[in-house]
Length: 306
Image (tube, rainbow, N blue to C red; front, side, top):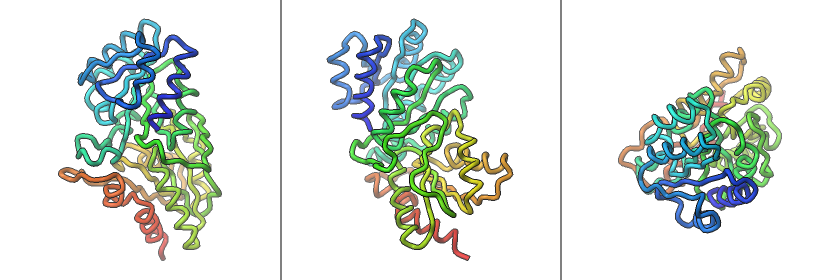
C-alpha cells in the first residue's frame, strides 16, 4: 500500500498546496518522488519522531496539512504524548501515517512489530483511525479523508502486491464494506490481514459453512450501525486483526454486541502473547499466531462444532 499512498499523496499535493510530508528517516524507495516534486514541502527530521510531531503540529496550526510518516510502532508509540497533547487535544489536521502494522516487519523483531497501535489511537475520542485493506482502498481512503478538520491516524500496509479485487477499492468513512454474501458466519477484518480473512472464508465455504467477509477499515468513527446490522444476522462473528486482541477490532465488536444486546457469538482472532524473541517472515509469524487463512478456518470450524 505504500506506493498507492505515495501516489495518492502526490495527486493531493498537486491540487492542494497545504499538503506537506514529513518522515523520520524512513520511506526510502517510496517518498523520493514527492521530495523531488515538492522539495519545499518535504522534511526528513531524522530519527526523532517526537520532534516530527512537534513540527507537524506547528505546520498544522499555520494552515498546512502535514503527513508524518514512519513505521507503525515508531509512529504510534514514540511520539504518542506529543500527538495526544498537540494535534488531538487541539484538533489540528496532522495525519500520522503508520506503515506495516502487525508482523509486516517481522524479521526485525518485536521493536518493529506494530501490535497495539490501533488500540492506542482508537481510545482517543476525536482521532479518526483508518486501516485500509489493500492499495486501492488506501488510495480511496486518503483522498476521501485528507481534508478533514481534525487529526487522523492511517495504518498503511507495507505490501504493494496484496489486493482484494472483490472490494474494488470501496471506502466510506465510518462504514463497513461487505465482500460477498454473509451467512451464518461473518469474518470481520481490518487492515492488510483482510487478505487472509478472504482466503479463510473461501476455505470455510468449501467445508459447507456460509461465511462472508466484512472489511472494517474505520475504527473511529466507529461503524456501530453497520456492525449491529451485520451481527444481528449471524450466529458467529470472527474478528481478524494483525494486532493484539485487546483494544482494536475485537474489542470494538465486543462492545457493539454487549451494548446492543445481540445474541451473536464472538471469536477474537489476533495476537494473544507478546512475540518477544521471535522474528521471521510475516507469513511465518501470522501462522504462528493463528492468523494464516488455514489457521483461521480451522479455529472457526472448531468453534462451530457441536
